[in-house]
Image (tube, rainbow, N blue to C red; front, side, top):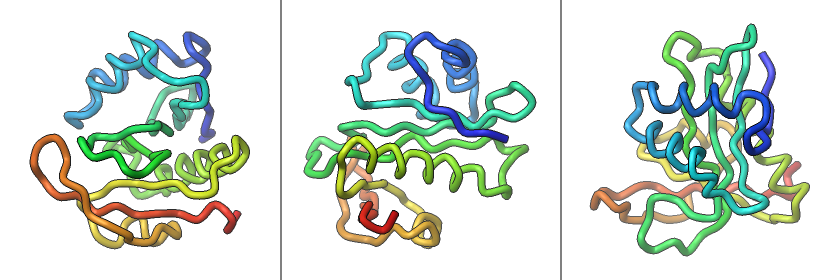
Length: 149
C-alpha cells in the first residue's frame, strides 16, 4: 500500500472521483464534485491510499471545512477508508502524509474535525474546541502542532 498526493487530472484522479462518488460515506459525492470542478487552491490536495493499483482510501488538506464559522485552517478533511480495508492504519498513513506536506508548505498547525473520541488523538491530535457544522451538529476540533515532525 502506498499513499500518493494527487495532481489535478493526473494518475488516479478519475479513479478517485469514481471511488468517492460510490463510497458509503455521504461526504464522498461532495469530494467527487469538488474534484470534477477542480475547486482546490494551489496548495490544497487530495491524498489517496492505493493497493494493487486500486484506490482504498482518501483524505484532503483544505483551507475550509464543513463549518460556517471557519476560524481554523488548514484542515485534514474527508478521511475515508474502504470498509474492507479498515483496521490496517491506512487513515494514519494518509494523515501522516498530509502532516508532512502541510509542514513542507509552511504551516505550523493543522486541524481535524471529528465526532469520534479517541480516534485522532492516538495520532497526536489534541482537542481544542467545538464548532457547529452546516447541519447544526457540534463537532470536536482537534489540533496538531507540526513542530512535532
